[in-house]
Picture 1: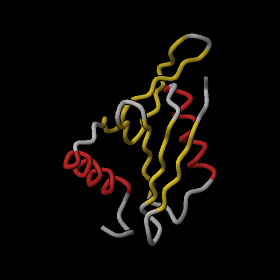
Picture 2 (picture 1 turned 90 degrees about the vertical axis):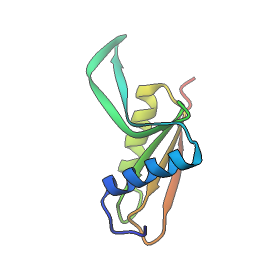
Picture 3 (picture 1 turned 60 degrees about the horizontal axis):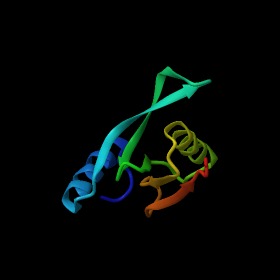
Picture 4 (picture 1 turned 120 degrees about the vertical axis):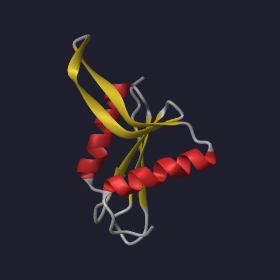
Length: 104
């Protein structure tokens, strides 16, 4: 598709691509947040959760920065997942960053 579209356009297109390739996913996956052993009413919503284990965040920015990495790390901590992937469609070519949280 190239760069220049909004994040929601890329999200819809990527959902179609996941289906075509048989990749299991949940779109806008709700990730509960716990505080002192209790679940808060507030939840994070990751763009995708793939294979029940990989948090995928989409961006349409000039570049991936510290804020995007911090957001993905928060999602990983909240969901007790270890692997995340940031996909940025806003640059002239696709940018990606693998994010790992070792919570164990």
